[in-house]
Length: 297
Image (cartoon, rainbow, N blue to C red; front, side, top):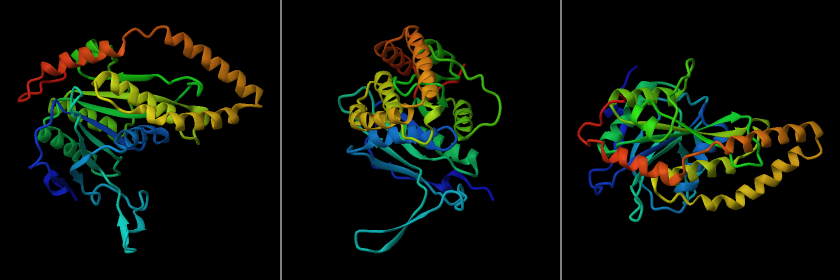
């Protein structure tokens, strides 16, 4: 059974004051969010902020509830309630920053991916977002003792040149992230995909250092505070746990040293600074026509 966007997307922005140069951030738990790093990064960014809900996607048509189970909980009055998988859009205003943000921090759906992506496009157009930044995390050969690299890609030729981003070359099975980027392309909405590495040998752990790396990159590029320093205590705690997992294993220690050497060599090849990236992005966005967001060419 198919659904229209207006049947599954609820919007509450009619009485919201216009946003300043808004950018949409998207992170979805699922295939491209190993360890929940990207969604936890946005959780930290939203923490203790005055975020206002402006839209929500009905979970019913999109989820197999035998895989993504609803949760039963007791509310403040002791009444039993059901918490369904949520995909809600929030706005965060930054009076002293370069722009305001719209944030979708949710779950990759199981069904109707095309309609789900169309819902996101509808929110972009309704709130005037002229850029979408999707966040993800992947298991890679990175050492837990270093700040992991954040790599970016875009199908927009201008953005690729300005921000020194690669153009996607992957071919094969994809997730909701791949479908979303193709849908944004067709709608003429520029998008950037940012992915951070997670140590593949510590997959069962949490990785706040990787989450902080994503937030720091966003802060540099978008010109808004992400408060990633709030993660320092968690980073230190998990660093100790990660160290304990490797210590005493000579083979693991040798492997870690090899990863560290390779990582440090790659660091020397990093050229663009955060200020360079922010200035280039600002110029790109200033050239976007709000009535015609252009194509990816």
